[in-house]
Image (cartoon, rainbow, N blue to C red; front, side):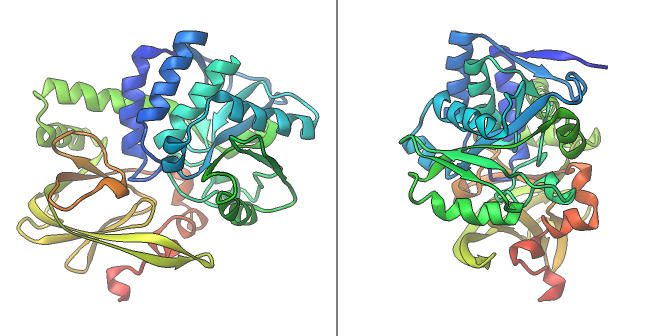
Length: 369
């Protein structure tokens, strides 16, 4: 049954908490994007969030979001006009206007950037995305699993540059865009997958905003009900099968390096955590746990045993702030809680796992070493 929800100021705190947890350490900081949404809602009003069956099947829609570095976006931010130019350029190329938009990644910064420019442009947002979490590559999107291309795609920059990319698959699109970011100031606005709603709906992860919103609301309510005791909160959510609470401890070592992936070197990190407690009888308290990460947390292991791995969503929460951390903000000396969340079902297939598990990122499982 078709439904419309209104995303106003009161929803943003819960959406932010959920988007942070679903980012698995990637996707970028949400603070500035949330501020942009707040400003947009004050000036232009709340955003309509449409369920997956709210539009006629042939209604044109497209996905959008930031590509490149969210850090660069923070240093050189821009308003909705950059995203509007990307969408309008794609619409001119395709010959029809879109009626609604959705994020290609409903986690981290992109969950908010889509809401911000949708409010300014008075466009409704569809409750779906192409990841169901944060991934760092456009190859790692559900259209790839369905043999569909995101292109034609448009990337625009703050200096007015417009780049159209067509006749490339999703891996090729990723490989074209990443080097381009160096010339476009580090980040760009993407508009892609201008298709009938029925195709987007069939291809995407459904209910993405609802999941972030509901997860964040549940997390905040449980924190408040448990006197902001994070360990007790996560234990309650573990009991409700919302997440797996893996345990808590102190980060005792951080080792950053690079790893070859797709013909280029990407930042990679190994975090060592001394565990004070462990759950499920899997993680052993009083021993060290290893987290392997690239842009996201990808693998949790201890004593050669895999505890959790992508596409499972691994999140690390700062005990002091009670917020999920980005991989880049996890520092030595922090006390953290480690959790995992189930991924969207799309990633459970053999093809889905091959595009998301540690081996895709060049990380060997402990048993393979």
